[in-house]
Image (cartoon, rainbow, N blue to C red; front, side, top):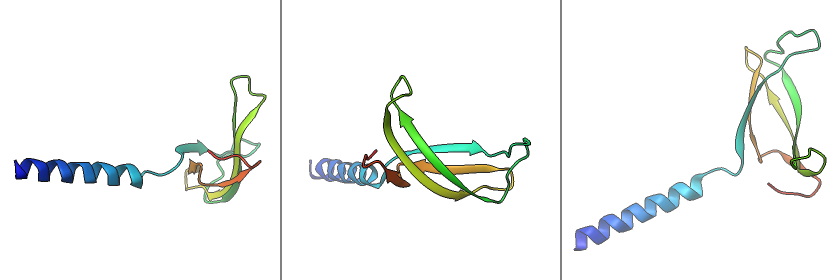
Length: 90
C-alpha cells in the first residue's frame, strides 16, 4: 500500500509540474515574402498579430513581435508572448 501511495504521489507531482511548465500562448509559423514574391530570408521582421471575433470586426487580442526569419523565409513565434496592445491579455 505504501508503494502505491508513493507512485500516485510521484505521478501527481509530475502531472502538476508538466501543467505548470506549459507556455501561455500557441505556436504560429509563416513564410515571409516581399511584394515581388521573393523570400525575405535571414531578416528581422515586425509582426502585428490580431485575433478577432467570428465576423472579423471586433479585436479580441492584439500583440506585436519582432523576429528573424530563417534561410527559407520562415518565422516561428508563440502568440501570447509578444507585447500586448489594447490592454487585453490572451
